[in-house]
Length: 193
Figure 1 (cartoon, helix red, strand yellow):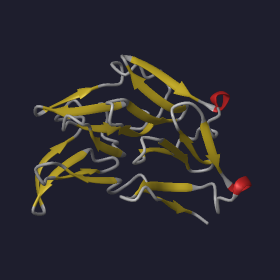
Figure 2 (tube, one colour):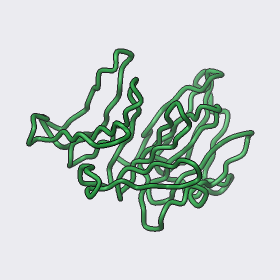
Figure 3 (cartoon, helix red, strand yellow):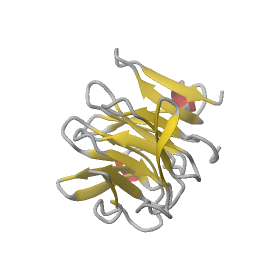
């Protein structure tokens, strides 16, 4: 599951962006590759790119698992791992932005919140589900943050505390491959079970 296209997004101008696992990032239009970014021809910290997300300013951010985070803005890629104060030996699997500009990171250590130039990582001691190496983060329509993993279920953070969902309280399977929030604020989960 680390080969092939791992994430797709369409930008404001209608270009399709693809995070292609071990082949870097592609920008396409009408089925034609316009640009291909990898660690040889750009500042991508590594070719492996598993997720991408647009920030409120229109820049596109990439996660690279154990390779950290980078950002594409003004036709340049910048490695953001140190700017975000991400600790070494931390895998970043997903990124999301809330309406206030806070950056949310799904990491192997837990849920990261980058706000006011400071990174806080919430973990089990804060009430979060057990962090896993395969994790995602989403922001729902009410501004709540959802951190899900393949193995521990998911947590919803309301800004004060976490509410956890797993097999013990009704979730069909703790192995959450993906989660999305629709326009009515319903959560849709891709589970193994």
